[in-house]
Image (cartoon, rainbow, N blue to C red; front, side, top):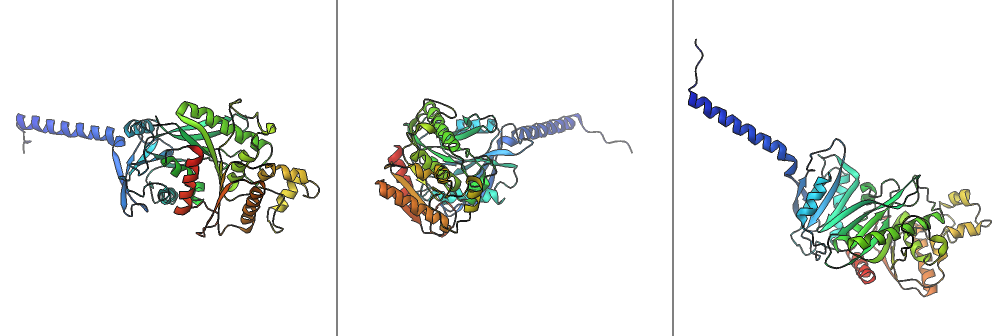
Length: 414
């Protein structure tokens, strides 16, 4: 049977059709990394399932894990950064971030103190594989970025050749007015922005306060891993003061007002307090970057931690470790004294904000009591609020407490 011949007109039409289909597929293949996928996510703030838009890097997925930006749009707090979302997101994607946008539609509770629960849940859900499970997420570089903000990473504050120390700064781009900054020393000695440690500790302070218009910086903890509960002095103080100087120097270029408040939880709490108690002591100046810039701070947020080694509970499980390194306390009292941030305090300080969870360990609760007693003896102003939601060794998510914390920061930084 002879082969069927197709009329010339039909062959031409078919060729044109297939050519059009091929062109369309080519466009889709090229554009697919630019298109937004959608993931459903249950918000605690809105009480409904939100549609998260996932935008891959412009160059497509890299071979390895991708840093992630969770970008919050249309929050209830006034926007401080005036640069457009479009230009900011375009740059993040050009820098190979996986960008996820959440649009809150100006919901009234989409701000501190209520937003913190959503921020904690976002980190929890990524850690648990409930969110972005189909993507190769770099859990060491997951940033929650409020609208109008940019990110400056890996700003070195101590160029020690063995372990250079750096910080990541999240700041409002082209701010309507100069703003103050928070600095926190990470609880993760390996990855300063490790999502696991932030999630486990429910630490939402920096993420949330950035949404209120402040700049925030997460700095490497000055002690190298593995952390054994020992903060070497004077090395730690020299390094954390360099971090404050570096943030202040960088802030002058970013539209910040020069005011800085440290925030500390767990192994970072002593660092925050130390910046207050060693202020003006020349022996702790001169390390790291930006010499000549002031290392002064305008307050401190101090949560659960250790502040002195001279007043410990007899059953404190860390005492044998301290004795092994520093010697018996009765024979090495000055060594034990030198390592405690509280033991440098000789006069009244700027107002401090103190908080701890009601179900913390007896040792941690005792340390907070000792700190408050010493501040009272010196006539220092302090605002202390106990977190009454029994959650153990975690940062508070209580709205009343977070509202008071936010008000404190506005007083000290504006």
